[in-house]
Image (cartoon, rainbow, N blue to C red):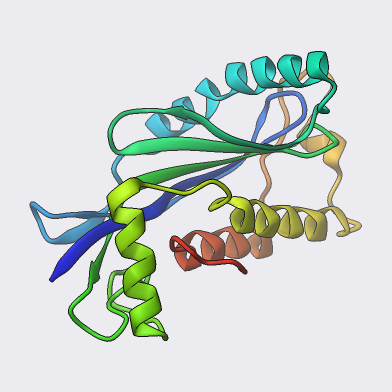
Length: 207
């Protein structure tokens, strides 16, 4: 028996001046063709990432007014439709991480031991009974609070590694004007984002 579960459709990194730094797009399961294809184009995902900036600003104002702080896990930013939802995290330097989740992006075979939970829908996971209960709950009620924390932690770790590269100049990628900045071209960073997006499934605690 196959069940649709959430998967990551897009990972985005936005600079402190609201300039795009990186975007990774991941395929989702399409039952009509029984294949994996992106649910939006690159341009559409870029627009979705831009649409989160107003939410970040509003949350930051509310947090500042309540004394919570300006950075951290903002949780669900907004639901795009019945399938896509945007989650966000802002570092203390103003860099923003955005995860766009497809609530039906992956197919798992719950009749087998653990089922198919890989990015291509075919990689088996250990702990069959635990995996079945975990993804079954995700399919029934969506994502629980805190499901994105491992993703944001892994994204921040990858970004910190990038900042430690002496050849990477943050100001070159996030100019004070917010215009004309370069995007992140590091192959290692792109590979880290790809690994994070393909490895995450509901219930994963470490990436």
